[in-house]
Image 1 (cartoon, one colour):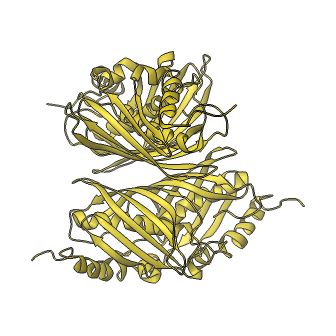
Image 2 (cartoon, rainbow over the protein chains, first blue to last red; image 1 turned 135 degrees about the vertical axis):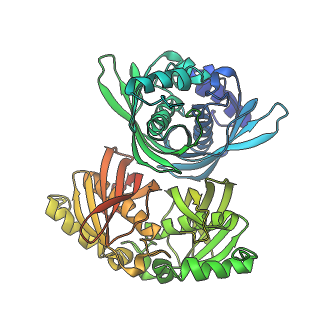
Image 3 (cartoon, chains in turn orange, green, blue, purple; image 1 turned 180 degrees about the vertical axis):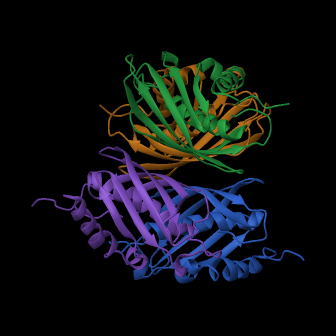
Length: 150
Length: 150
Length: 150
Length: 150
């Protein structure tokens, strides 16, 4: 059976929606949208809403962290197949104020034992004006199995 | 006016419940419980449920990350007052399978400009048997204001 | 008295050579060369030699780490003045084999309390062919004093 | 042939001295001493001298970083055999002033694909009074070969 998961940009999006989002109770509740998961690069979008905030009304750090972690994991998955997150480091740069969050991940090096990825997270206002709110560096581990990225 | 927020172990728990949890849309939805926030140490508890899972039914990495980040921030807050998370590094050690998550944070050094904290996250089964699932090291920044930890 | 340390690209190199390298016993012994320290960007060069190696003859991890750390600190210094390293995370990507190491740092965000910087380290062979060997993300802290970056 | 490298606390020290220190040009020049490399724990000692300093006369950050990195790698090696450092995160807590540096590493989890280790670094004055100067968390990768830790 051919592995068609990442056979085209469109197939990869459909695959991520079906598996990484819909089968995950938390990602499904969040409604995080894969915009790009292709050839070592990823882009994710998440509309903000009140139940994703911390006490000042900004996006909660865990949500910003998820956007960075998933950007790393999904970029890696597009390069090497199924993965889990081994570790990541994240710096918070500014309060995540706005109507949405967007993150992008780029594979720096894809090895057999680990995939190193950098990711950035932006908050966007209603006009799509973006502000960088976090940057991260992650170590993603290929599982070698036909299963899903975390 | 005396700052009574962290005047006793009980007062600190009440304060964290009122401010860090109830006023945060996300923490409130999660239902994360402060067990200890006192003299540079923190303990948090979170009951697992289906909408906190990734696609295998384990606790989602973002939820594990939140437990680590909050353990760092709340331990720091108990030592220096109001804080925001500057950065953290987290290693995932095992799938977070079980009925609950528990995390503990310990301040390593509390300075004026940064508070360095270590945190661990465990998954617990229904009998309370614990397994270490993540460890983290965070840099927490005192705000110097009478406001809340992130 | 005007602060002329970073008044031009040339002045900044001269300043870094005099202060950050010559006054540091270790940097002086190493012979690390500032190539660029200007407007939030840095470039450093270090010729390899046998006493910088680990047991396989590659550049020692501490030397690779120094190239990343200094690239972060010097890029930050060019943006905000005197700094110390608060923390950094580094991923090692490949053995640092070759005739020299080169690193570059780029400020992601320069704030009053912290400057977040990314850095990459390459090994170069005798023909100048480069291979990425490490990537890092650092948090650099402005001292607010007229003293030197670490 | 039996692997006798880590067969006793004494054998492990002798092995580390012979291989990790003497065969490494840089470690040999440094004179870093393995004090303990046994059952997932490590301790290293390094006498300070002028050519290990930064411009204020403190131990250079790269030397502090080496003490943390090696503490992680050697602790991991004592648990799983030959390793390389995959990544680490380090926080600098105080200037490393004094007559010596000492570091200790403790394996948090030893897996087949990665070993997660925490390490602390202290500076010591001439009377052996210690001050914590850095803390780190590292991901060490078993090579599966009979070769040396980096």
